[in-house]
Amino acid sequence: MPTQPLHVVFCYAPQDEDLCQALEAHLSLLVRQGYITSWSSRKVGLAAPRRSESDRAIQRADLILLLISAHFLASDQLYEVELRRALQRRGERPDEVLGVLLRPCDWKHGDLAALDMHPRGANGDVVPITSWPSVDLAFTRVAEKIRERAQQRVGSLSQNPLPAHPAPAPLG
Image (cartoon, rainbow, N blue to C red; front, side, top):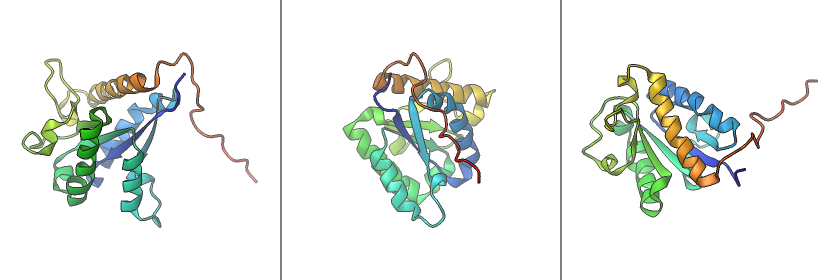
């Protein structure tokens, strides 16, 4: 039984929202089984200051997922602020940052080259999610990597320790 689920934070460009949602769907079993909880900027209400919420989420993250695309690389906020924080955390605890290559882009020649990037093909090379014959297979590979990290951190589960979703409030 886990002591506490791994808190996973998604850092991604708004243009990659559809791929972030797909990855979250592939991680839903890990959430149901109590291995992880997740946070992404879309969970911030319109009235909340997005940047301060993002800063707090990154500070308390157990695992930061950097969802890499040309849009991520082009964003000053993502590249100059969130990536820098993640790399700083990686310097302290390297297992806390995972790169997920969403789309083909020139990521190997910058600060991202030092990251543990996924998904990996059969030969071990990093292959962008959108370049796989099956996007679902690519996301499954990423989910398996996150499960591996979560199990190392929180231990194996024999049964579901946490409810999948909070109970709905009574009507009326």
